Length: 393
Image 1 (cartoon, helix red, strand yellow):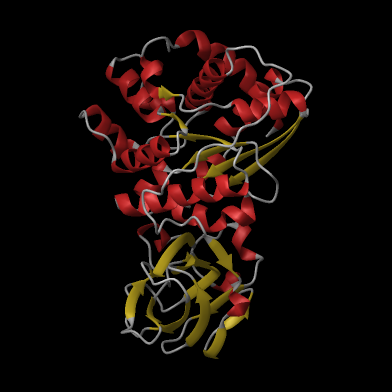
Image 2 (tube, rainbow, N blue to C red):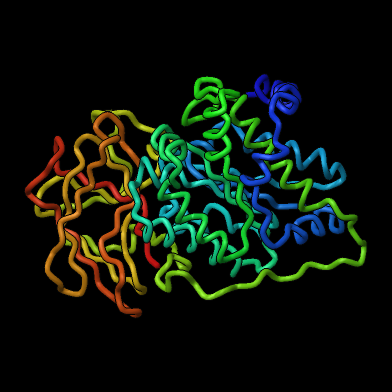
């Protein structure tokens, strides 16, 4: 890790002269509103809380530490706290539900978000789901701190790249861009930048590094963010300047997950067949990620196992790990007809895969009761359900 970090500044310096961002990046770097509040905080108070949220692209040693290094170089007298809230495979909906736990533990001054790739290839979200997730994150974040500056970066996978080269906008980027415009949030369209460079034969997909960019590709993202900083902070700072709250417009979707939160599984009432504890992971087939194998989960593997959960809100779901043995649960809210929810994911055939599944959305505000029963039918190798957290809005 340390060796890579020491290498990044040198690589960053090499990338800068290799790419001409004077024209293309002007179209792909969108400064909306301003980033004044974070600069005032960094210069006046000499402290800064900066958070990064996303999937594996954020969690990896990539653009995130590069941007952190940029900020430390720009503000050498500022004491920064950097929060890495990247969790591999997670989407914007999961982000909205875990925001309070993983990010809002401190008053955040500058917030970086990336979910375009995972909303596409992992969650396969509809436009509505993309908006509910990202809008939920932004509204919740701004309610926690109206002065928070936010930047959204669009990374890219092979399918999104082809869509861009065909002259179209990938669904997830289009949905996230509409949210960013509504809240005057700045965006870095790295996906379009990469597509344009590849089409112009000045970059290759291999050189960029693929879905999880190589250091070279991450340096392109960091360079674009640095250029955004240059534009946002080009005017001199006045020592008498004071932060101004960002506007909070009407939501694009009144049911976006702006009140998203986790509910501890211990709040569920076990009727039969479920256990709250740490599963015997060694006995289970499929790969496991360490972050999930030492925490208590609510789990069951026999058809007919039943739990109930009382909650309040307009939506209810669960953040789960779904392995090769993931089954189907029958979800009923307030005595409604049970709805089958398949927990198996295409990526979970060889991996206990983290994902958020929703049992009910568009509910009337107020108190509700969820009932989950393990179904007899299954599309996987078993009937298992393993719940890390319930998700409510």
